[in-house]
Length: 239
Image (tube, rainbow, N blue to C red; front, side):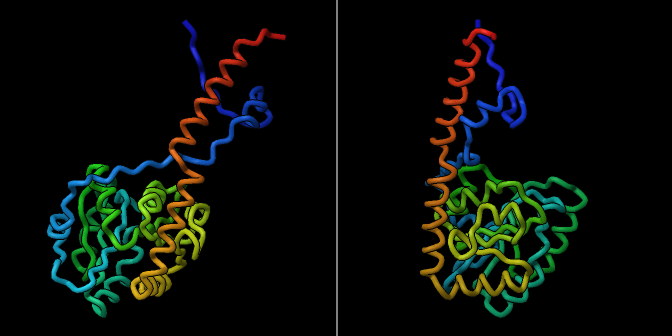
């Protein structure tokens, strides 16, 4: 029986040569929206009137904890909703921090046009992303947001806070839009609402970015090459 250990591949270590030979671009992304997902039921659960003309639902997916900062945009978005009742912000995610969750719920209740829903099965969440107008990320800090990459894979426009982790994935005006404060978010969101062609262009270019840089097939192939490389190194006689 052969045991294979996958070590961290870093420079200045014994496996630095392997590190040079195997360089994955990032996490592989694959989305699988539930084809039977009832969007109208989602809107009902969020208490969003489906009779609204030109409904625009912005989706913010995050665990309810301070680092995700789901309260960051609420005041600005609520003011915008009062001017344009067809825009809604729906926050979806698990209640990670109980104390902070109570704060979020209280704030949402006071914010016109903002809704809060619990976490959903992944297939339903992907379907909700596919049906929404745009995906929003307002985190204080991110590594590489799966929600952003999944939205791109689904050709959904992305509006993300301009932080290093998001800026590493979202190229402003190409694969999405980056905002530095709530007022800029509203400005960019208004632009998306008024320019459907921009949203379609961002969605298409985001999809292409994921296809070329975050393909799950490429990630699979990379790790298969890694395993073969390590097996080959293990078979070589010690010097």
